[in-house]
Image (cartoon, rainbow, N blue to C red; front, side):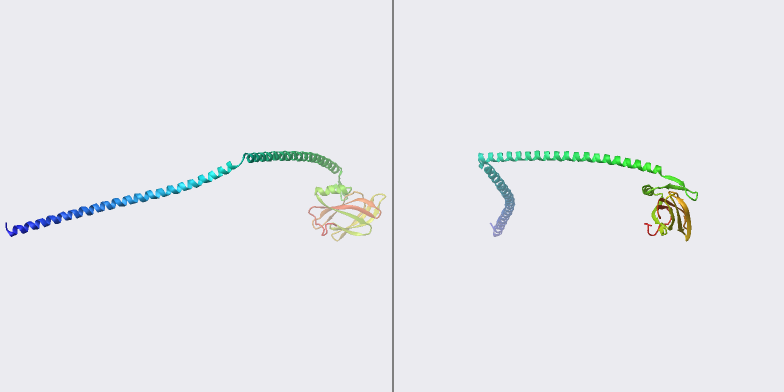
Length: 274
């Protein structure tokens, strides 16, 4: 065999060996990768199981503490003697009896108060009934008094309104509100302001119940001579010629008492008391 043939054979053997080694290296590397991946999966599963085990351990510890607390409460209750339990039962019964007696006492007091209130209500109803009766009587008396008031003609021939013959009848007229009323007491020889006019008594005849009076209105003197008791004495005054009426209800020596009535729209005095 020649030297060339031997050299070619060695070269082929070396190439085959190298390829074999290369294949083995690739196979080893692939196996290493597979083993590493499998190892990682196992490690992850182991960590998960470890966390689950830790959670279960914590839950068991919590359950154990709760069980211990319950056992402590149960043991405390079991530790009470029969005598203590009976004492507690007797105490509860005493409290219930005391509460029942107090409730009965309060109910009795409430019934008594209700009875007292009922009596008071009955008394009030009686009083109200009496007041209603009094009001009805007063109303009847007022109506009777109003029916007795007279309407006559005045000294000017004009039909007068209702005439009051005393103070009580005058109060009724005031409450009617038809006119304004001003009472007066006038002594002889004294000029006195009443409403918006002046009055001066000249003569008082008690025997015949007559009087003579001067009326001063609008800077004029109007003589009302020999007028009678409860007679409407009429005169006009003011820029709108309001009709005033003067009535004397009582005549004594040197003195007369009565009132002046004016229309609602007439001027009022600066001092309403006059």
